[in-house]
Amino acid sequence: MAKKQRRIWKIIVFIFSTSIFVMVGMMIYQWISEKSTSFVEYREFGISMPVNYSIHGIDVSKYQDVVNWQSVKNMRVQDISISFVFVKATEGLGNEDQMFSRNWKKIKEAGLIRGAYHYFLATKSGKAQAENFINSVTLLPGDLPPVLDIEQTYGVPPEKLRQRAKEWLQTVQAYYGTAPIIYTNVDFYERYLKDDFDGYLLWAAHYLQPSQPRIYRSWSFWQHNEKGRVNGCYTIVDFDVFNGDSLEFHKLLLNR
Image 1 (cartoon, rainbow, N blue to C red):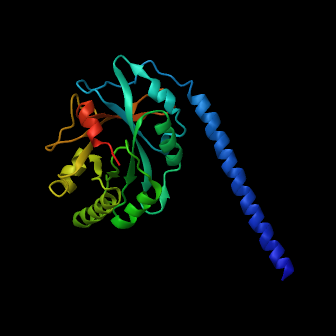
Image 2 (tube, one colour):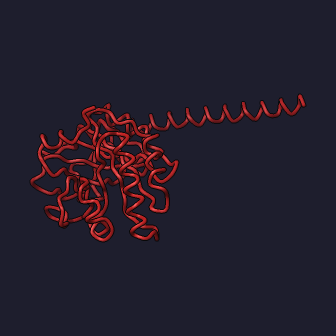
Image 3 (cartoon, one colour):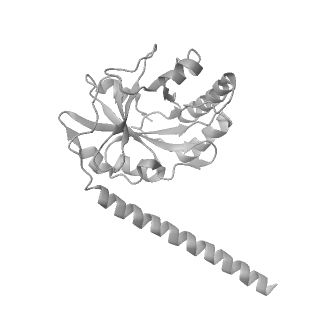
């Protein structure tokens, strides 16, 4: 029995030590990566920017790896700079984006407006997915409303998809006290979501359009390009604009 207990303790110590080693290694990697990305600079954003918009932003996930957010904040091309960032927080059940915690903290430290989104899996419970998001995301005054990213049916019948999406939206709204934003592409919205979801603010994805997304309803954010460049980031980035002025933008932000 004593030998068995010693063996168990050795296993526990090994697991604990390995976890500490991995955590320290990740911290060192992120620190080195952040320092190196501070030297990543571009003369331009690398894409054509739509005119007549004053508030520009980007959205990121783990695929952008370590981003130097102060470099993002400081970049300015003529009269355009990045004001807000949507960051992936969660996906499905029990999954948090591996860069979320760092991004969420560093974006705020850099003085950028931040928003968090959940990538929706239509095959899973909407309520359970909402709880996954709630467990990961603490929203503070000055943050953007939570976002439901819904882009695929995964073979789920449209009525079931809409039911589960509504579960997510209602659960999240009840918890945070503010109506979420829906993100999707124009075709998906018009095919699967219209009418039932027209009361929510829309973040529409529709690329390479000259002035606005082509959709029948009003929209608040437009993801207009997926191949932009920004200082402090090695990879290409999605670019967005807000459909309104600074007063309208700040009315969207959480105030409690």
